[in-house]
Length: 200
Image (cartoon, rainbow, N blue to C red; front, side):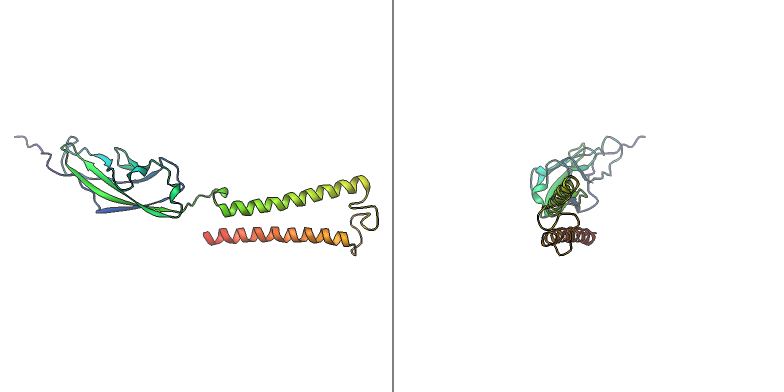
């Protein structure tokens, strides 16, 4: 006598709902999570399950394959300020028995390590590079004039040689600018390091 199993069990999800977290700046087709259903029917015929996302809520941002892998199907960059997206996943067996579960996707701010992903960092970097370009240009011009003419600024009055007398007004002004730029540079670096430390 042979006892055969009947396809009388409905697929089910182990959890009543699922919560996953993803950053807003991930690439399209990024894996999010496995949302796997179970079927208590016996054998490879009856307990085969197919998955789909119902066309409701925020379905357009995600997709799910036959292995229950949930992936992004659309960019999430419009949710930079963090939000929650909701999708309804269905599991269907060969007997068309179906169950569904709600998945809450928490979209959070990006955690990418790329230096240029943060607008504040880009602004600091641009200011830093501007100061370095100014200092480099002034240094190159000064060295050129000193090497070619034997002085830096003018043959008249002070500044005939470099370095000149400490009482030179022109040199005080230039050296003050250099000191201020150096201080600003160190301040930028310190603030950036402190900011990175606070985010860790």
